[in-house]
Length: 160
Image (cartoon, rainbow, N blue to C red):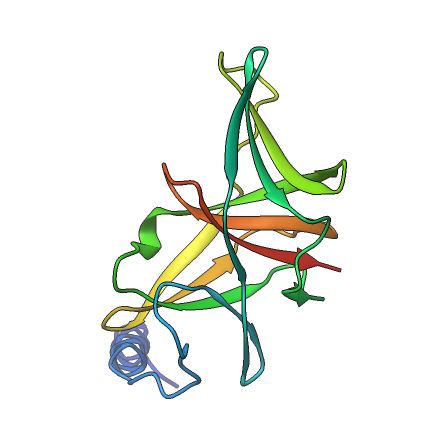
């Protein structure tokens, strides 16, 4: 039987060994596009520019089309992104609503209690400029977007 000090030392060694391992999984073919991970297959998210408009006391961001062609059955999807210009740590995840044949999100100009909030994501660096992003909460079926904070650039996907 191991003493507590031996067990702690063994645990730390295993932790350091695991941390030092090199990533040998699939790699995104294009930089700055998040890819949905389905086993060893990578599915690119739909890249678009959200159209910004002011409606009454709201700012509305709209993406054309009722649904994204990038789809996943996973309620907690995982993404890979190879970064050049984007910062993986500044990516935010939002749920979009479908209305009038488009996907959109509405932000009140004055913050309200029910204003949209980014969903939780976990960002892990796998190699230089290669990151894994994981939804850190269960996503309901629907349309979603990853977006760099402060940008109208969106990377859409659907959970079904």
